Length: 343
Ligand code: PMP
Image (cartoon, rainbow, N blue to C red):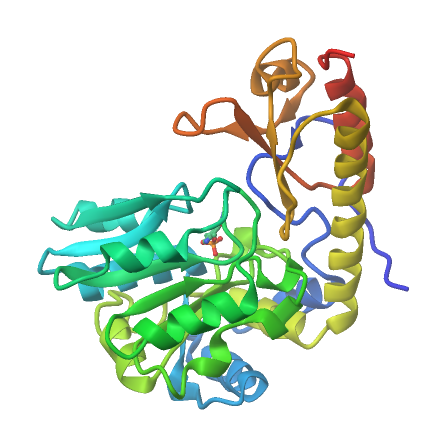
């Protein structure tokens, strides 16, 4: 099995940003140390190697890959590339809204439609708001902050219906933690769907949020259009970040270990919430979205008193989100949370 030195638990327990408490992997740390000696050089070769590795894994070419400083940069680049002249970005709400909010700053409108009654990303409702003004469609699978994944055949047919006509960004930040894992990815459709863009990140299962690195997969002309607007000329990530990412991709033992322990922590939360009668959504990610009506006070404030950070959203009143930390952190969260739950 895979074991490693974990950070100590003194100070605040950070369960508010969906980070991976087990990262970076030992191999990534070693790769970063080794690549430090190359910090005097531009990172081109490191980025090229990483692109080649990603392309091979996805059965695509390096021209199908864009490396950026986290998927946040990818979301910004897509918003910029396709939303620059105004028009509409179509997406459900609530979701990870960085792209839409960024594009609103460029003069775009966010044409939004709510999640369905079960908090599922509502592709049927989204279908109805797509039209002549649509510049870009955004789908988050699994979605944040709900943690729910879209059934594979449903998303596949949605991509089939729109991916030739509209730039369609599928944000797969949490795909490795979903039930089907990477097999549930839409990346396999890129050859048939010329406008499909897949966003991935090293911040979640790979545990490299602080290194700021992610990648997009799309047809070469789409990749080129986005990279043309990258103000760093294809070099927004450091040699350290690129080598850490490469080492992590080549370390399936770390990914399995991370996933296994995250799922263990998630089950602890689900089991406790079941026992307490706290309503929550079945998560396919490293966080759980739960209803706070069983709590005697706002769980975000209550947990802050206990030195535990979780979060809520003003646009989803009555619900909060807890990220899955280490198993030990989840024990502490549950012990603290229990004090505020009405029996
Ligand atoms: N997409 C989704 C759905 C996310 O939840 C996050 C981070 N919380 C991101 C993108 C951005 O992650 P990063 O920039 O670290 O890759």
